[in-house]
Length: 149
Image 1 (cartoon, one colour):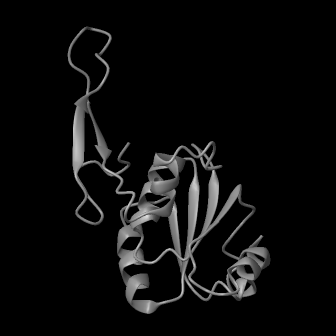
Image 2: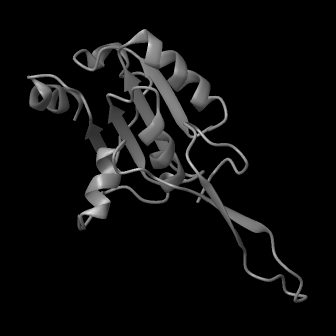
């Protein structure tokens, strides 16, 4: 479900379907979905391959390490919905700028431009989370996740 109908994030296809009918029998509002490319997202690929649980759902609070420009973060934002929250940490400034622009239209995304190796620098922004997801291409990835958990 697209939490920002009419807008795409990275040029992905959007699909509109008829929503449930109103109580008076008239056509309900359209519902919009976004196509999630498994070649651009590890979470999408895992879901496509049949992973049992991604530990993210409506209302979840997610710490996303290695958010890049926010393509997958935007889909996680759709999953957690308006009652959830995605703390998106990205170190590089260029993709971080794109992440901030994406977050302007998604109020449940909090972009954090900081090094995930130093969670004490952003701990005051992040409360307790239900899930930590890491997409950091670093040899000490396990250590980075442990520091942020």
